[in-house]
Image 1 (cartoon, rainbow, N blue to C red):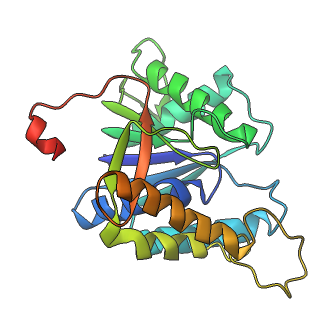
Image 2 (cartoon, rainbow, N blue to C red; image 1 turned 135 degrees about the vertical axis):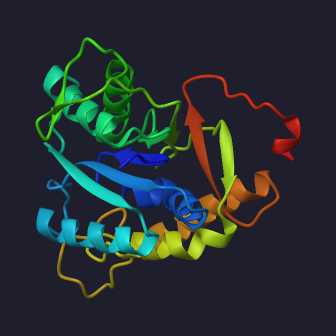
Length: 239
């Protein structure tokens, strides 16, 4: 299946937190959208790889994506090497997305920036025809997406583009809260408390979306960075 938009991030829940509103918006617009998780998030303090997979499936159902796949790289210890790049290249060539959104360029969580660099390098290599990959016994065609963007995560980074998600905030929030082991956890839960399990984290997430929205005079928005200058054919599209 060819996708219009692929969100390829390192942990289950990164896609929902960074681009859940964007995903829901383009699903509603009839675009083919998929989520690719690089790891199972197995090093997370709370829950297990199995529960995270169940939660990721629920979140995907809420957002209505056509595809959700986990590449099974090693959480915390994946490297930007040939083996990991080829895993990502196969996924890119399999789904041939026009746009890829990945993790933040830099962040407090070291996996995020490392995953962003890994995906960036693999996206370039995916367009080289002399790199041969096979999927289901068939040689894949070289393919490179038209655009790569990065989400903004815990460490605030000035966005290059801001997208109105006002009509899709509630769906984004529902998709994040599908990760019941991770977010908005009650005080009587007996697992260790974390930075993101505190209900205040979701309040700050809403506040970030509202702050970004104020920049473009809407209620809620998501921001993204780009590794290249962005252009439009019509400046009236920017109103």
